[in-house]
Length: 451
Image (cartoon, rainbow, N blue to C red; front, side, top):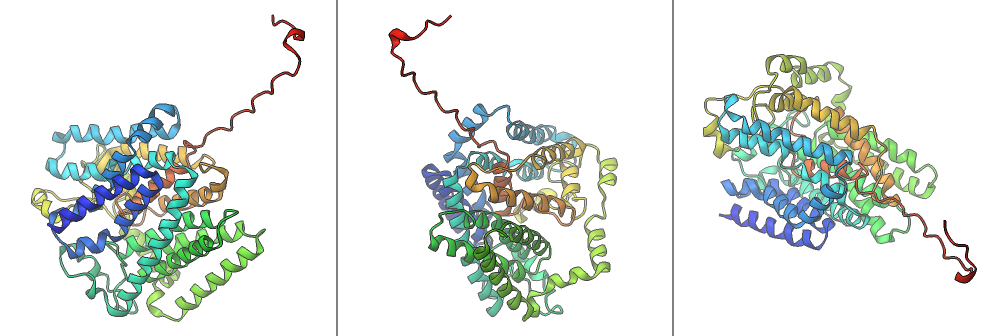
């Protein structure tokens, strides 16, 4: 019953904070997502699976007026139109459940993966500068808390924090660090990949706030500490994709700080500190296998062994919602999948094609092209730099989505990714109103009549 209690608490917290402001609501949802993994592992019951979903539901209800207002006022904006299309197509497929072999329960789980997090696109579009500032502060604090737990797992072992059960099976299969002598570090998340991915995802938000003028010195220190915690977490987790994302974003940040020498020097010193720590610990160096071309080719081939073209030819309408490898089925629903086998490889594009068909994949590609070909802008000029780095991170995520799955179901990484995609779309940017013309100083009796 603890799972039910945590789910209820997550819902109430997200709703109450969300009613206060979108920024506080997002902070509550993200905090729930940060500790979802360790809570679910230690309180393993059916209800604990829905802790994060309940937090999302609380925020959606709290911000329902903002969502509806955005849908009405900006109905012709590309983000709003694509949102309606991306939500409608999975619903249509779900209504045609009889065309596919899996049980409707499994298709309902696939429906969750296809559209449950999509409202974060609109929430990101509705965010104000104040909301983003609150989010950045929350992410910095959460990163520091996650790092503290990750260091404890590193020192004491993950066994102290994650009991062995069906939820943690993946954690205990990832003993491939330092010559297969140590586990990857998950922090408080469901997996090491979720930890590293989320740490990389926070960097644009922290940098976006840190680089702004007139930030209080204490807040500036907090943002930098959050970025350091994120960088260390990326190397602690043992996953390689987050390292690629972090390095690419670091190059952009250095280029942006060329005209701000003190900030550039501070960033370089922090980077050197991280490099020193990583270089002196073999357990933090799994990313070095990236220089093994044969291993990388093998990894890509293993992830994409079911190619996109093959998927499209064999499953033009898809394999049904929940029918692709990468959509996780809770253990208490496995009875409904006894006579059904998921197909596909570790490839997010093939997962989308298998679950949504050719049309679904084309819709997502069209949306991404529309979004990424536009100039990224924040809700105010102060967040333009942050918006550009969010755009870069979004591009990196979708560029590396050919390797691995879970990008659209990560907790809470997917929520933050979609929120950022909504933020950079410009749907929430209000045009500057023209200055009202000053009234004439000529007495009314001397003014010429209008014709």
